[in-house]
Image 1 (cartoon, rainbow, N blue to C red):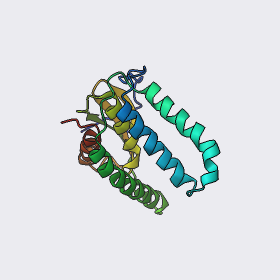
Image 2: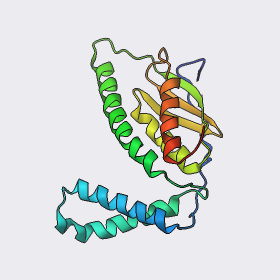
Image 3: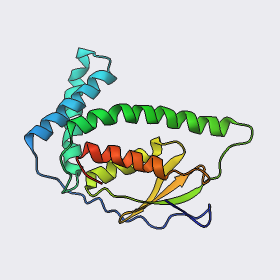
Length: 181
């Protein structure tokens, strides 16, 4: 991970390596997506069976949209990797929120913001998208720019080394998509 020369540097224009376009439907993957979206709906509405009047079209639209927006080489999701990722995601979300809150609520804010560069090893467009979107759950980090394999990350503390945290997140995302780094 490389730190920028100036904490105030702003990232350059974003290049989008995540190609758009519908990927071919694979029924086992589509069924898994439908089941996960339905489970999420059921949890969000507290198991209220009357909500399915709205839930069925919402879940169907969400699954259709997700498949439509997938990159052409989205890859297959590993159920084992996904099941291991969910608790990691929840824990890191809580940890990140507590860390940021504790930093900004201190009388002398413990921050030294700036940008750092991280080189991604993920290849699948969907894996890259998940990785970039999950970076903000890590304490004090936010994905700011992406160009090819280089990712600019805004961090609240340039003194801390976010490289190991990003590598750990990248390995978890790679496991979701069955990629080797």
